[in-house]
Picture (cartoon, rainbow, N blue to C red):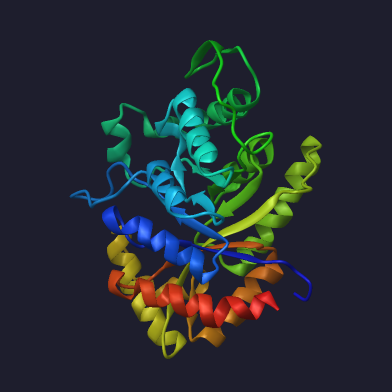
Length: 313
């Protein structure tokens, strides 16, 4: 991977009053990105969760240069005018630092029910919404009448600082998400991918782009990557299995799947795994910390001081 530029980000571990302080600290540590995801209602009973763009607005006010990534915004739960305006607000107030990561969600149908959106329509809604976002950011008097949204002469001011608009990274795992990234996105942002599967996705996205005449120059190859540190890969795997099983409340034995899909072990072992992902095509890593909340800050610091410098020089 000699000569390849790789950038790194961290998901914010704190929420509420501690978010701004942690954002400043991550910037001092030298991360390229900080990230925040969202759910409206997660789990049964629902656990605490914030919305991505308001949280990133707080982080923007506490920092100066670090890029801000939504990891991710649940696009089908928004009206395109509202999402365009919210994203523009963060981009303008941050001086043009927003990367809008978007996905369709669906693992928690209760949050779709709460907002009156049919979960089975989430892909179609997002396919209609994403090109509207770009039009609302770059055009005046936008009119549209589609299956889900109707707009008449909508003009949003101010425009985003970034031109033509904030980058759109499309998240997901399957073919539909890859196609969405090619048609509407500026980057690919999957999660729970092994290096082998990431390499396959690069090949497939390239094929899809060739099929529609899409030039992928400037397209960003990102990964939402779970990382757990430990004295050994096995110890880190146990930590990740427990943390992820509790955080997402999915069923199954996580010990059988964290190995292929997570970055685990000592700093040296993590470096080797990151190299495997980089060789597969990843250029932007957003780390989510697969550990107890009390350990997240240590993971952020060790990664910044003992792992990332290896890739800087």
